[in-house]
Image (cartoon, rainbow, N blue to C red; front, side, top):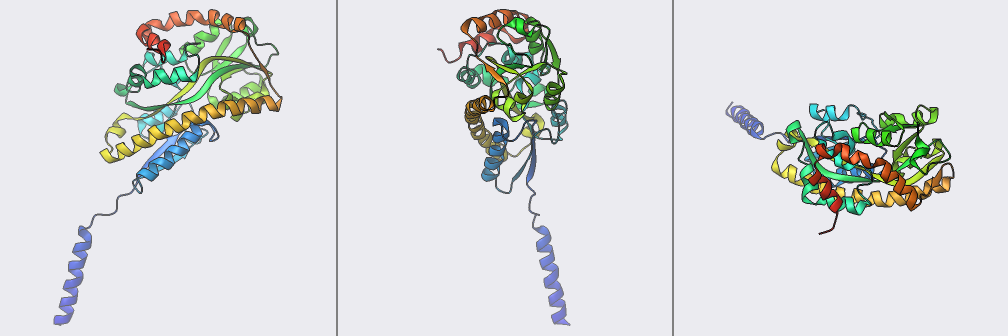
Length: 332
């Protein structure tokens, strides 16, 4: 009996000891949703972020990727982020004008002559401050990801001067600046989700669109357009954002690791954007389905002059100092 009592007591003691050991913490699930294909700069940047975050925080985070609008499309992803249904998204900068008018600076036509000038602005004080411009609305910016300079395409043979798009319907992102840009050249802008663009071009619901070489290639827009004018008239960039409350509630070590992963993924993604830009332009040219139309200095000057009033229209909302900081670029 003593032996049996001893054994039972031993089991009871062991049970108490096991009960006092905390259960192993489950990794924090981070859902990263975006609307483009994986074989784009943003798609590759998301893959790199997952790799880096899980390497820096082994067993602590589980980054789940949902490309090509698998989880949420253009119209729903911001709402989903604020509701906590996803933790990371990377919308184009055009999507944020309802939260702060300052972000409209990125949509002004012919503001940034090249990606290097854009980098200088985004890495400077004014650009970095914009990452925190929407915290009152619950949005925290973590970094800027490039796609490339925007080109114009249409289902017409000629696309050299503003008069060539007069009366044509162009798909645009939901941006007041982009709407004003196309109205300035006499076109009819049509706001439309990215996932709907190919079919709209194919069926003639819209006549044209503006986009980067990598998006034109990955979405096969070049197969349903006759002409792509090499205008470089704007930039298509993304801001990787998270729910500010969720971010602030993370343990400090998790935030540190995710920040490091994001910074490294940003450099990787932006380098990829430059490579994809050159590669995809060549692939489109080699395919021979859409004609790439080079523009002369006089052609580009005509586009700039026609779109010039757009700057004045949005100057007060954006702020003249911010526009000047963007124009300054890398100059001292």
